[in-house]
Length: 172
Image 1 (cartoon, rainbow, N blue to C red):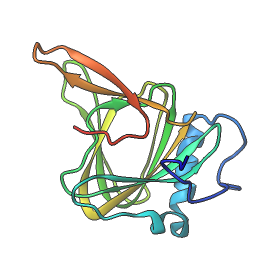
Image 2: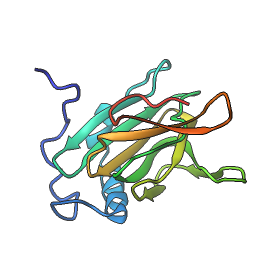
Image 3: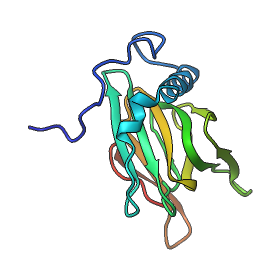
Image 4: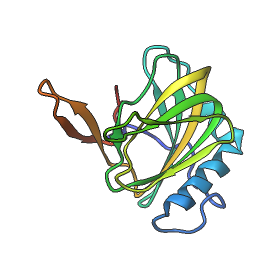
């Protein structure tokens, strides 16, 4: 059977601090290190006005690393990464990250080239395109992103978490 995603690299040798699960800080550092090497991610950038694109850079039993291409109007909606921590690096264009807050507007953060973020397991956020065609971000997860939770408000106004596989298109 052909895998759905084929990693672009066989190794991230020298870009991750050690074998095993990585902390959110280590994930943030790894995403920045990948971002500083355009030869790794530039060939995986995709311009697609219809759908946000995500391409697998690398995966093993402990981590996976992705390049995400964002065009105008594209975003994820609020979601979590279940048991996975994340490190994010913006390498091209600009995206906005919103963190969910109860009883208050979302906390907003603009990410421009060179900006990084980290999130622990259970971290709830959404990301959307702001500028650049495409805007590009690097995401590194540990453990691998095998499940996510999408947050939706039902007709009665109740917030629901919808579990989903980690390798699907997240939508607002």
